[in-house]
Image (cartoon, rainbow, N blue to C red; front, side):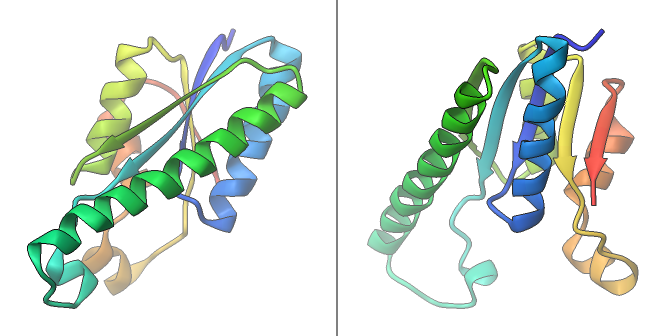
Length: 145
């Protein structure tokens, strides 16, 4: 029986669908959820711009502010549905590992996340955090597409 779900989100529309479905699933099971977002470190190459060091701090502040607002909105929706919801926002370059570490630390028995369905060269270049989670965990994973 599922008692605690880790819901990994990234702010995308597909991620919105996944967390809403997780709330729907949690309610009849009387399960709690932890909504989690991982903020990637500031990366000049990823942002395709050469900015000053103080921009790094501003980027991280803004990324965290947006993530915290997003996670708070998820917690509010869960509360309105009668589902207990914690939130966590972490920084990391290895998103899949942060998800796995948090799921294990919180003793979650299900990971819920979305897949953007990248295939071929795009999947090789960008990678798939969902695929990495699936291949590196023993915890069941529910993937929304």
